[in-house]
Structures are given as structure tokens and as C-alpha cells.
Amino acid sequence: METSVLTVKTGSSASVVDLTPDVADFVRGKGDGLVNVFVPHATAGVAIIEIGAGSDRDLLMSLDNLLPKDNRWTHEHGSPGHGRDHVMPAFVAPSISIPVEADMMKLGTWQSIVLVDLNIDNPERRVRMSFLTG
Amino acid sequence: METSVLTVKTGSSASVVDLTPDVADFVRGKGDGLVNVFVPHATAGVAIIEIGAGSDRDLLMSLDNLLPKDNRWTHEHGSPGHGRDHVMPAFVAPSISIPVEADMMKLGTWQSIVLVDLNIDNPERRVRMSFLTG
Amino acid sequence: METSVLTVKTGSSASVVDLTPDVADFVRGKGDGLVNVFVPHATAGVAIIEIGAGSDRDLLMSLDNLLPKDNRWTHEHGSPGHGRDHVMPAFVAPSISIPVEADMMKLGTWQSIVLVDLNIDNPERRVRMSFLTG
Image 1 (tube, each protein chain N blue to C red):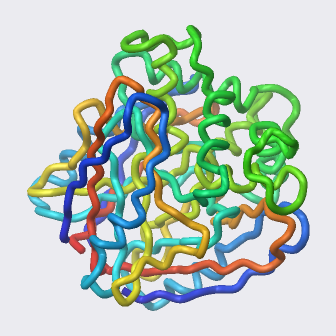
Image 2 (cartoon, chains in turn yellow, blue, cyan; image 1 turned 90 degrees about the vertical axis):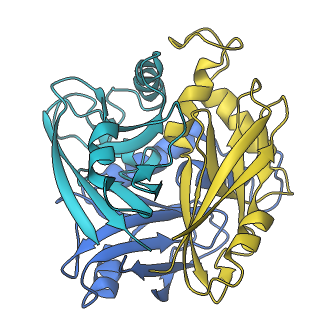
């Protein structure tokens, strides 16, 4: 298995960061297999959505509605409402796998791989890409 | 890695379509490994749930509650409320992997693999199955 | 592919059970690869979250809000509100994969692998771990 770790700047606000070019680079020359994208952080996840037409903003709005940034959470560390950041990965998991054929991910036309990071206290994130030839 | 693409009719309403027989066919004769089911569309996901006792309808109702089909969305293309279809894959991901032993998926008795498709503008979907022998 | 099935006690209330030590044991001595954790049950899921600071309780609270334990569900078997247990795996999927390097899962410091089980009628669960060397 080949594996590589990327560092991604996510800044100081909730963010959706495109990882597609980096993962495409990683699988180049590797033939057929499955690439796994894994975020080793407890307040981030990986999703596959369309970007560039507002859906990234829509996702953050949905997360604000579904997991409100208020005082309901038992988890009390960090910024106010930070507890919800720790629940998010149960719904937007930190691991996703994409099939690869002839050096290319078989994503649909409108699919991008994104890092979803609600945590405003941690401006830098790592992402591990792993390739299985099967 | 062996891979194969299926075409699935999803019709013109939000739908939950059973993929289990097709994936079971695909893994037959392949021994032990992991099968990945991947939907290359930005408004569909893959889930593993019970079907046949109403949970497929319950899932669609939940999605209507959690991601309402109204005008809140930034994404504005397609039918009214279509923006929510683009957020769904962040929660119901387009990729899932199932262990296979001796040619059989090791699903539980009540588990079925389903395509979840909210998009009413796209009546046909592709599903990619990939087998890794590990 | 090496595979092994674990039996986990989840008791008679909704629960979040740490699987990390068991999966760490399973991957020991296996080198590099990907470990898949799969729950063959229709009312349970696998998540990767922080535990020990309240986020496990926060997750159950979120699930109570997002999928209320009331009479809205078509699925009518089991305890009142049990229908929601069957919708949960669409959001907290029963399958997750974690990269392994040099016999160790590459989890972040605050990440634990947990079984999420809402079903109060089923006190014992199986978990299948599968290792792919890629």
C-alpha cells in the first residue's frame, strides 16, 4: 500500500476545502485500485459533493441547522458551540474511498472530494491518502 | 482490481433502489475481499438499510425534514429545492465498502445496499462496483 | 484478506461503544494496509469520534433530535419509536475504513472507532474487521 500525508490550510472559519487535485496527483501512475482519503482529526470529515455552484455554502448552512453552535453540548472545550464540531464526523465521516482506473479516479463530472472542517481553532489539517491495488 | 458499471432506473421521484442482487452477482466467484459500491453522481448516495418494512420511506421522510425542499439553498439550478439534493451526499455518501468471504457479502440478515436518489430530474443512474482481493 | 468477527455487549439503552482497542489488536502484526470495520446489523453504525469528553453523549442527543423516537415512522416493529433506529445507518453508516501503517492504525490523537447502537431490543452486536494489504 502506498500512502502519503498532505497538509491543508483551513483558516479560522468553518470551511469546505477542495482536495480533488491533490488526490488526482497522488493516484497518477498507480494504475487500477481504490484510493482512501482519511482525515486524522476529530472535528473534520471528508465528503464528495459538487463545488462551485454554492453547495459548499449550503452544506455549512445545513450543519449550522442540524448541529447548532450553541450551549446544548456536553463537550465544553474550545470556542462556544465547539461541541458540535465533535459530533459532525459521525455524520460526515473522516474516511472515504474512491475507485481508480487507469490512473484516474472514477468520479462523476460534478463530484469533488472536499475536507469539511468546522473547527475554527485549528487552521491547519492533515489528510492521508492511501492507495490499494487490490 | 475488477470493476463493473451498472445502470439503474430511478424514475422521476425521490427513490431508494435496492442494489443488493446486482452487487451479489458481481462478487460471485471472486472469493474473499472487499467490494466498494460507488455512485458517480453529485445528487445520490449509497446506504445500507433494511428495506421492505417501510424504512426506505422513513429515510426519504427524514431527508425531507433534515434537508427541506425549499428556497433556502444557494445552489439554484434544476427543480425548486433541488439545492438540497446536492447537500445529501455529504451525509449519505456516494461510496460504501462491504466485506466479502467465500463469494458472499457478509451483510446482516436485514441489511440491503440501496441507491438513494433525491434528484427528480435524472431518471437514470450509474453505479460502479469494484472488488479488491486485498 | 484476513477477517475476524467480534461480539460486543451494547446493553439495553442507546449506546456508543469504543472498538478501538479491539481493532488495534486485530491489525497488530499485519504491516501496511486498510482495515475495514463493518457492523452486520440494520440498526447500528460505526463512527470515528472523540470519546471521554462528552461527545459520545452529544452524538446520542443529536440523534434524538434529528431522528426523534416518536410515532412518525412507517416501520412499526419493536419498541415505540424504533423506526428511527432503522434510518440511522443511512447517516451513520455500518462500514468505515482506516489506513494502517507498520501495524498501527493512523488515527488522530483524539479519534476513536465507535459502534453506535440505538436499538434497545438487541443487547449484543457483532463487528467484522477485515484487513486488506493492498
